[in-house]
Length: 281
Ligand code: C2E
Ligand code: MG
Ligand code: MG
Ligand code: MG
Image (cartoon, rainbow, N blue to C red; front, side):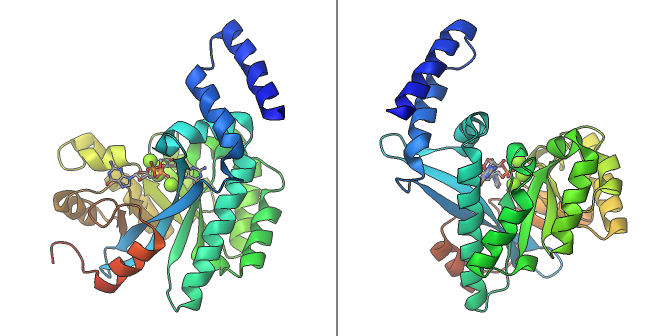
């Protein structure tokens, strides 16, 4: 009844402002119970190191299996989680589940970095650090196999706070990646100021790397600076061998994308690891 009450409140303000679609409201109502109904699950997308030709990491990606709609894209529901503040609870579930999986892989002798996405709202919560450390301790995950992905836009809001927080994570042996790099502002400045381990180059640049000189120049500049700073450079959304070849020539260190594998459940990932060989070799 409480959720319904809240839904009605939003519906009223929706009619007034016209800003919240009834679609978003329906999703919101269903998201309130998705966690308790165990409708969320994680899939893992492999990342291949170009120097070794081996899978060295994965990114954990959230999926929502809606009882009637089926699979709903995170592009649709993550913003709703953010707007409603539900992202805190769901985000904690993601961290806990990814850490649990990481600990299980470690116990099986698998050395695999696991990337976890943090939304802007999560990142700005004062209790984030303590909660992450608690979840790592509870699950027995190895901190240095955990990588937190943050976006440059959110880091930009309060640079001093962000830098202090990132330093705490790194002091705790947790790795930091800047996600969707290249679509924000003053990106290069951040590379110099923020204590990070990796940059993930946005798929938008990868798509054009084989034909657009400007995008290629940006990738080249980012990898050059990344190399100087000893950062890992991961290209996102690599779908073709041709893109892979260009990116390797530009100095990118790892690739993630359908060429290597789609986001998949742990079982499929283990099978891929057992049979994996570098595409095109
Ligand atoms: P992202 O973190 O940049 O994740 C990469 C997205 O690109 C994923 O979409 C992945 O499936 C997709 N992708 C990977 N390789 C390819 C490719 O070769 N071609 C194409 N066309 N797409 C590719 P997905 O899983 O739909 O997630 C979308 C976004 O939702 C993520 O972008 C991330 O921002 C957000 N997200 C996903 N899971 C979480 C989560 O647990 N927490 C938070 N805060 N955000 C999440
Ligand atoms: Mg990501
Ligand atoms: Mg990304
Ligand atoms: Mg992206």
